[in-house]
Length: 130
Image (cartoon, one colour):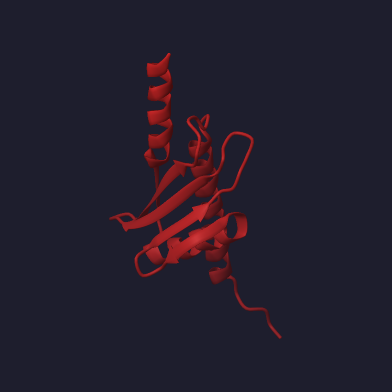
């Protein structure tokens, strides 16, 4: 019994260090994608750090029924086809998140895509005649 408790304690202490990376490619420049991701993070989450020069964004998701919140770090890497957005979701003070990190990443990827589309539509709109 003591060994089991010790093993669970070690796992609990190591859990915050465990992270899960999610990746999606977009056909946009790293700077354009960063701006869209930052707008989404400001609207839906709590931004911890935003460094446009380094293309690094960190935000907290907040608590939910399935998690104690996640710290999400987003990095933006230029590729031949556009930009690779990589999310590292790290749970906070819990052993199991029941797939919440994957759901958060999927939701964020979709929100960023929608924001990027809105920005693209605005840039192609013609100014109204006065």
